[in-house]
Amino acid sequence: MNRSSPKKPLTERVLDAETRGNQWLADANEAKERGDRKRAEHCWEKGQFWLDRANRLLGYTDKPAPKH
Image 1: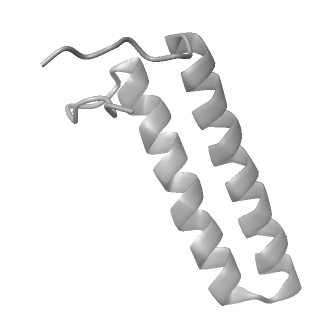
Image 2: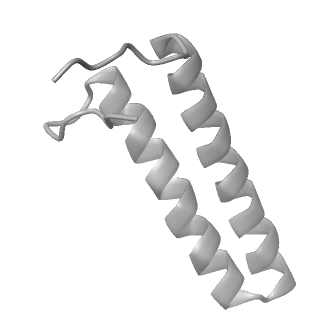
């Protein structure tokens, strides 16, 4: 099976994941301040997903890096 290389370089993918993760965490904090607990929890989950992805791309975990 022939796999092509990613379209974006690793540094760009890491930066994108970190930016998305931090934006989701900022949205979560804003929702918490408004008293919207359900939205805050959703945003925290999404933020954690993206920060975990950045860590996997950087090799900071035992889990394999995302394939896409």
